[in-house]
Image (cartoon, rainbow, N blue to C red; front, side):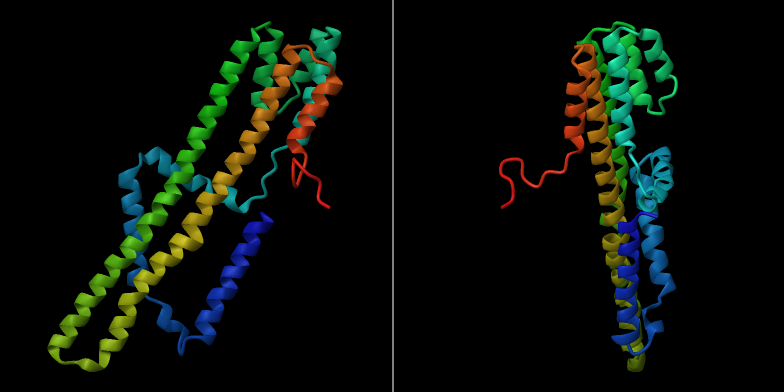
Length: 258
């Protein structure tokens, strides 16, 4: 499991546990299944109306990404690019093709295949840049679905609260004042559920997916730069140094810390 996700889950459980067991007279008072159903069902219904079915289903499959440790294999890609650049610099095309058959990065494989086919550098850059833009747009749309759900959840929480208030007013009209307090608490719980789901589930999922996309784009741009240098027949040592700069951890690019 992704360690940051695990820390976030444990922290939220501790927070909610503290609220339920230390700040409330009865933990069961925070349980309102009809209110929770209104928030969840309303949010999902609005999401399905807003997006095509295939996009929503694809996003549901990405929930596991938030919990799974992400490994971009950037170091492996750098090593493969450097090794292939040495072979290409020597003019050993057959060895490059053999090494290309073992790579597991389809983006890298496509780029090197274009180099072997003597495609012009400009055309290679254009094609690979289009693939990068396509991935960025697709994954941005996936994260946007969770942002949309985060916007809908509090709204449906408020709807549940309004429904509860209407019921409370009917009780007041009947003159049964003893249950006004419990009815008011139930009405407010739906707003609580909406805000909780928006800020503890949907928004964090969206931010996690956006951060994952940023890391994947850095890796793809690194591969793109490496392929561009290979087409220019730059020295393998220069290519290796350039690619390693993508992974370098610098606190400040202008001045070293004192």
